[in-house]
Image (tube, helix red, strand yellow):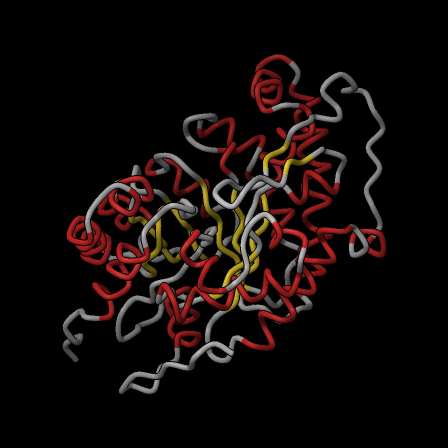
Length: 351
């Protein structure tokens, strides 16, 4: 079971994160593993490694729960890929290696854009092999997390649609065949909505949705409003009990209003987004999460580099401190703990 931590103010990690997610006062920002947290050192510590973790519920639970005692991250989060929804909808997936996440290897509708898309029924969704693993692992995580907040990751509709017909085709279709784009993004959103209704009943604290293909690098604000935002709202709207975090890669400083329109409680952004401008623009309308760089400083930098960038996010006013994207499997524990300890050692807030 995850170790319970309570500070002098009587605030547990779970209480701190949920308050920060609601933009309420906390003694200090929580430091969470909001996106993928599997590192090879963590796998060795937990005795649970990729790729076996992706198909073994007990190992997935062990790896998720190990992030708090070993890395210091004040959360437990699973699974470890952006492919399981695409696999459920017909894509072939390579489960990867100890150092690489699963990758989609086929686009089942790339040459069949006129196909009739049949949505699996809820009773069928829970029986899909990797879905069964994730549901069982999430239950185990929740039962054994104590006062550590629990997170389940999910992929966004626009990104899933890209897996189904090819991301390049999807982006080209925005310009040439908008009706095809709407068809496949809606199909993906309908599926994610049904999946999240199932996850909503587990009692985990929040879901974290990754929508990398809807980045500013891929879509203009106007395109996002048409092809991503309504489907994000639809997919996330099926949840009644669980908090919601939306993560989008790239520089999203100018698209934060669009992210807020999804209805997410929190916005997770990379270091490419200016932290000060981002906090000013969001202005308390959602919780801001991030934005310590994954490549630099976490992978390539020193603990001192990590400390400096962490303090930048704190100074800017981020509600929750986290890596700006999923952790590389090769990041050293020392750098992750530097991020955590920098925040934990902040001077007490003045009353």
